[in-house]
Length: 253
Ligand code: BV8
Image 1 (cartoon, rainbow, N blue to C red):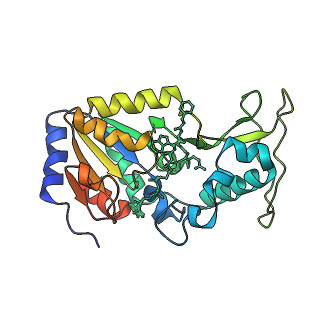
Image 2 (spheres, protein in one colour):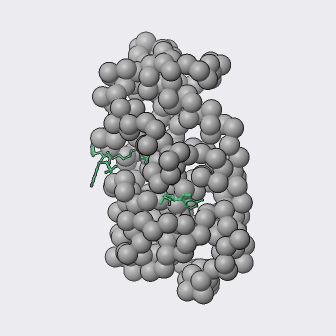
Image 3 (cartoon, rainbow, N blue to C red):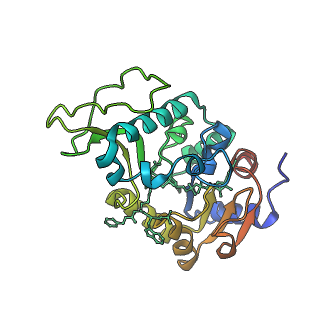
């Protein structure tokens, strides 16, 4: 069971709320770890030690073997569908319901924040389930055919407009982040009085630059992560705790 929040963190949250300051929450894969969604780095079960991101999470990989890439994303979609939001997701949803001063920015492509009742202001790396055509970009409304979990390769669905392959709505490496989401994220970083950085290794750019942007803009930056990260030296307080333990303690108060 996590220790109570370090006083510096409890004070920072209390300050922000008492001064009606804006709070920006930036989450990464660690936010969904306790829901059973594998992170990308850090454990032997993580995605990138089992699969090569450059082989699966790039437009080049799709051009080279769309069926391999699609099968991998169908597998991840099934994982997320079977997962449930945890107490940390719910703890984040509560204050956001009570005050519009909280901006939720996530690097996660899952929908666990939304299923916990949060409004996500920016999915900077896109969303698994926002399907669109790889060629013409048209959105794909239809559902997903049943999944054969053993399939290593699955032919993508065809676009109703141009016949192109339907891809997941995520941002692949080498692709630009969605302008609107990135604008919301950078505005929130600049305007916030407090930024909570939850469950990110701080290795994927440009999102990894948001905590430094917030700090340069005068915000107090608090990291919540059971491990040290690339960000730990550039935050005001780093709390060695999990999202599921820390957030209810911090936001429940
Ligand atoms: C771009 C969608 C250009 C896909 C993802 C500057 C320097 C170096 C490299 C670059 C740079 N600028 C750009 C790059 C290249 C690249 C990049 O950053 N590479 C890195 C790997 C070196 N960036 C890009 O390619 C970006 N695009 O630059 O385009 C451009 C510009 C204009 C026009 C055209 C092109 C696109 C980056 C987005 C890639 N897509 N996801 C998919 O999911 O399949 S990123 C993907 O990895 C996830 O979305 C996630 O965001 C990221 C993983 O990071 P984290 O979330 O931090 O997760 P991680 O596993 O690493 O860490 C988990 C943490 O949680 C750990 O610290 C762990 O301790 C902690 N934890 C574990 N359990 C818990 C916990 N914390 C709390 N509670 C727990 N229970």
